[in-house]
Structures are given as C-alpha cells and as structure tokens.
Length: 327
Image (cartoon, rainbow, N blue to C red; front, side, top):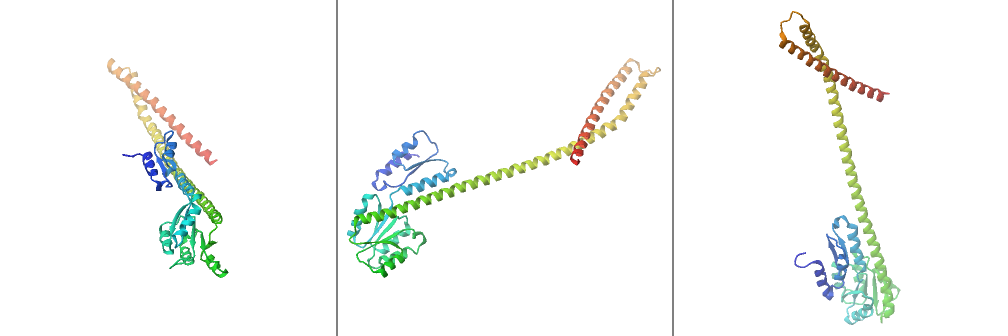
C-alpha cells in the first residue's frame, strides 16, 4: 500500500492496547518466502493469498477460526457498580472480555448492535426492568436466543419464581454472596459450550462454501461440455456439407469429362486424317502445328481418363459405404 505497508499498519494498530485482541488478516497478491511469519510477527492473526474469490472456504475458515480463538465476550449486568467490579475481578484471570450494563434498558440497547456474547450474567433485582423482564425481551429476538443467561440474586426464591426465571430464558441461578469458584466453574462450562457451537458453525459454513465451489465447478464443466457438444455438432454439419459438395463435384467432373470425350475424339480423328492425307498442302509448318494439336489432344485425353477413374473410385466408395450401412 502507498505511504504505509501492511506490516507497518498492523504494528501501529497493535501498539494501541485496546486493539490487542482485534483480529487482523493479512491479504497479499505476491506470496514471498517468509511473508507469513513476518506478518504474524507484526501482529497479524492470519495470512491469505489472493485471489480470495477463488478460495472462499479458506477466507471463511480463517475468519471463523479467529472469531472462535478470540477472548469470549461476557455481559455483566447489575445496577450496582461494586457488584459489577466484583464479578469482573473474579473472572478476569480467565481471559474473558467484559461488557458491562447497569440496567435492563442498557442491555437491550447494547444487544441491538452486538450479539456475539458467550454468556450474560444478570442481576434479578433492578429498577424499571428487572432481570426476568429483560430476559423475556431479549429472547423475543431470534438472533439473541442462543445467548445463555445466568441470573444472580440475593434472594432464595421459591419454586414458582425459579420457574418464572427459567421460563424467561434463564439457564441457571447463582446466589449472593457469590462463591468465586462456583462462578468461575459455571462460566467456564458455558464458555466451552459457546466455543464448541462456534466451531460447529465454522465447519458448517466451510462445508457450505466448499459445496458452493463444487457446484460452480460442476456448472462450469457442464457449460464446457455443452460447448464442446455444440462445436462437435457444428463440425459434423460442416463435414456433411463438405461431403455433399464433394459428391456434387465428383458428379460434375464425371459428367464434364464424359461430355468432353466426343469433341476431343473428333479433334484427334480429323487431325490424324489431315496428317495421313497424301495430298495435303500444309507444308512443314502446317504439319508441325497438326502434330502439336495431336500431342495436346493426347495429353488432354489422359487427364480426362484420370478424372473419370477418380470419379468412378469415389462413386464406388460411396456405394460401398452405403451398402455396408444398409447391411
């Protein structure tokens, strides 16, 4: 690229701490030895060579693998900042990324543009929209139904309220005060489920891309075969036309040669009579011209005979071929 190449751009992006986890795929048209390693050392997440349209499966696979390998994102929801800080402190050592919200409305606003969460940890008791109501609104949207929600509550609800939570979409409960080991264990289970689901989705999309490529190749091959078939058809038609033209030419040659025989015989006969006549007055020069007429006539007779023989052979071949096909 002009002014700043991909290596320098990647290094500059990585110098910003907030961009440390941002996936970067290096794309190049001229793959040189050592380029991949150089890109990875500069901070690129993966390396792909052009033309990318010929390798959609590789591009999709690279993007999805990066998404899977990125730090899982967890939303922490509580109306109290100290509770948010407590949950973040317990979980930060496991390398998760956190998005925090202090109300149900803020949760819904975040999910309008970002739904790539592995898990939502949400307090039940919140003003305006409580945890149950927020969960119900979240799961009204099809694209958000894959996000598991764990309710965190200070109250030991009875069975009726527990059922309400599960009916709203909760997958589990954690009671305050939160046991750090229990919180980490439950979060780890759902994060692992999220990663496995992402891998399955990546494989599915990779297979879809491969199938699409195969379909394109099959269609291109079919188109090529159809084109070859059309060309063969045209070739056969041209051959048939040429054979018909050759037949007409052979017939014309045969007829023309046959018709030329009679006048040629008369020319030779009259010239012979003139030469053999004892009382002719042509002189030496006249005899020379008559001799030349006879020579030319003889040569023309030989040519006519050759044409007739050739025509007869062609006709005999055609008749023989027809006889074989009929037999």
